[in-house]
Length: 119
Image 1: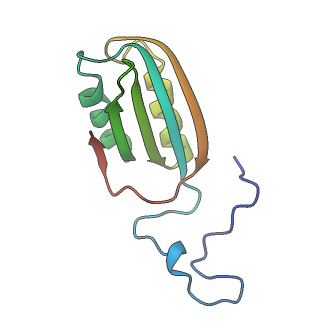
Image 2: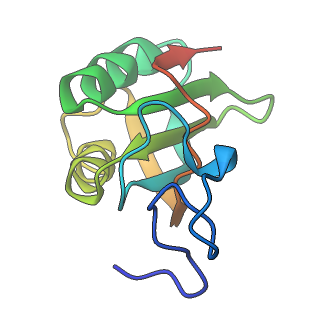
């Protein structure tokens, strides 16, 4: 999956000098970010707990949180294949509660998460 306008993560700017914004610890070239909202019966059923466990199992960083409208928001960063596995799990019968739909967008990871947490 390519992202237009994304710079190669060499840790250097175009002049070859180090660019601190590109040297975020734990950031891997090619990582992506999943931003998702999960709708259905997904609060009060352990959804955040199980999502944290799945994200840890897949080696992803990010956050999961309940929203006031009853949906759950997820941001997860990591290798594309692992992020896709999380998305597939969210849509599967293995996800807790009753997922009616998942709305997602994919972008380049920015390395702002160090682990996966619930809020």
